[in-house]
Amino acid sequence: MMQRYQFEVLRDGAAIIASHSVALPNVKAAWSRIAHLARMVDGAGHKIQVKDESGGIVILIGIATARRYADAFAA
Image 1 (cartoon, one colour):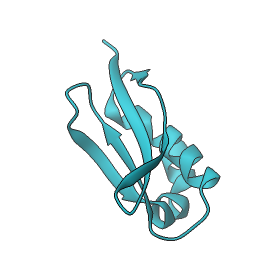
Image 2: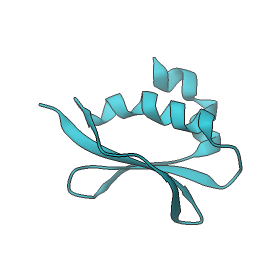
Image 3: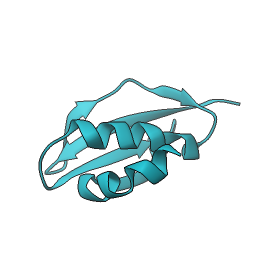
């Protein structure tokens, strides 16, 4: 069963990039999208936040960390 997840890029707690909700089979499938977003954003202090259908945060990761592990996330 597919679940919907909302992806946002945050700077100082405010969303600077928000995507529409995306249907994924599970939260593990979000990591390739996180890696893609991390490559798009330039600047320290940004975070990527993923929320589930109920609005709860299921992933919160800094851009620098996401970039560092992007290849592992995409695998």
